[in-house]
Image 1 (spheres, rainbow, N blue to C red):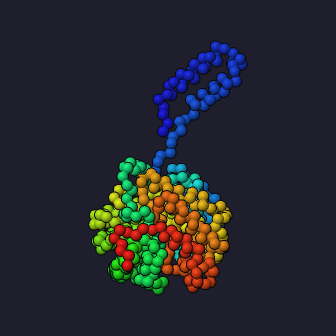
Image 2 (image 1 turned 45 degrees about the horizontal axis):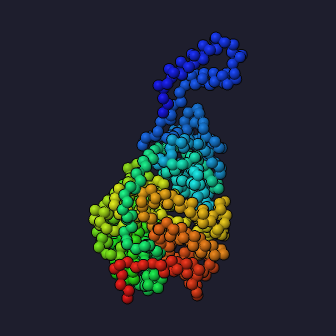
Image 3 (image 1 turned 60 degrees about the vertical axis):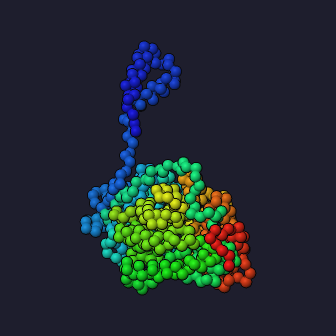
Amino acid sequence: MTHYHNRDSVWGAFGRFIGIMRRRDAHSLPLWVHAGCLLLIALVLSPPAMAEPAPAKGDIVFATDFEGTNALAGWSGPAALAAGCQSDHSLCVDRAALVQRTLPVERLRGCVLGFSAMIKAENVSEKPQPYNGVKFMAPIVAPDGREWPAAKIGTGSFDWQRFSFTVRVPADATRLTLCLGLEAVTGKVWFDDVRIVVRRLPLPPAPARVTDGPVFKGHDLPRLRGAMIRSNIDEASLRTFGQEWNANVIRWQITRHARRSETSFTPADYDAWLESELARLDAALPLCEKYGLMVVVDLHSPPGGRATSGGYAGSDSGLFVDKACQEKFVEVWQKMARRYKDPRAVWGYDLANEPVEDELAESAADWQELAGRAARAVRAIDPQHAIIVEPAQGGNPGGLKELRPLDVPGVVYSVHMYLPHAFTHQGVHGEWKPCRYPGDIAGKRWDKAALEAALQPVVEFQRRYGAHIYIGEFSAIRWAPEGSAYRYLKDLIEIFEAHGWDWSYHAFREWSGWSVEHGEERANTQPAATPTEREKLLREWFAKNRKPSWYRAP
């Protein structure tokens, strides 16, 4: 804020200087005196700089209906005006091009923004890649890299529809842009009634942990080391993993894969599906205890999740659109806490796998609030088992920058590590572009130091808040060339161990692509005849494991 209480003294100094100038020959004064005079005059005569006000929740950051004589002022790109949704004008783009305008990133850092617009399309061709097509997008530039949050919009022709998405502006963002148009497709698209609203203000900093007591882990072992598994795993595989491999933790996925032909999936259907999944877990828990495996109960498919992984029919926006789904989410965790508060094989409850606030309805809670509500509901029923919370940005390490510790006892914080995705997921989706680790990947040098840097937000969160960290997922596709997956996993595990983090590999006997029991040849989906280097790596670390105190070897 600009202060004015010294303005009289400034004027006094100016008056004294003018008096000096009158009493003597100005030409005899040193050059620095003339410069000082000019500076003083500038200070006195210039109007005070007013700081731009901070945003408030509900503020409209930007809005346009493309009406008026200067409707396209501030936009760059090949745009034209056409008939609007319910007005005279809209913005029209009739070829592969983007129309852009810069947004005031300085005052929006740390905010969660809601973007909405009315959009109409005509003969939009199929997308070469899933991220192409009609673009209603807000690219972000930050020191850690770039992000491209955008609305999910189909192809073909459709009449005016409202589309929306949510943007979390990083606290260190340097540029925020609004982009409208078509990318790598043909057709025509119209935009109208564009609005950007502040959904949430930056989270205030939380105080650092001051107590000297032990950090809560939810177990008394030096380390938990294991892997994710799918819920149809059999006893033979649990015995192999727990006894022969000596793992001591599994992350049990509760995942629903919806059928594409499905047209109805109600809350009652969700309850029936969940009960069938929990029955599988009920049957497996005695086996996990028998083989010394602690269990993370992982809700991969929450109520209202994407239709491909557990949402109700017609819902592809996730948990953060429907307030009723959020109420159901809390009820589901109350149900599971009552069910699993006594089994000693349970280590903890992973509230939601990789939550993503692609769209945040005005009436819905964001993840910080919803996770707190669910955690308090669980803790009221189960006072002992760990509550595991991932950050909202899909569980990525950088998401911990935007998460604050929950005011609930017994919380463990978890991230998933797949960076860089161009390496770990090469050939998983679309065209396979082989790349090696360490090496230059997607324009950046990736090695152990780069992995450590990518995980630095986790290190800082752990140190500041005295938090225990669990790496719930990490992996690299098995066909990464020339032993790259082994080198990547080796470097990551060494980093995890150096910081005292528990971890679970993705995954054991789930899909051959992530399996350490399969070799590097992509076409060969049979387990290798001899242990791979990746399998030997995991088993070397598992050999260091201790089993829970309740475990009794057969």
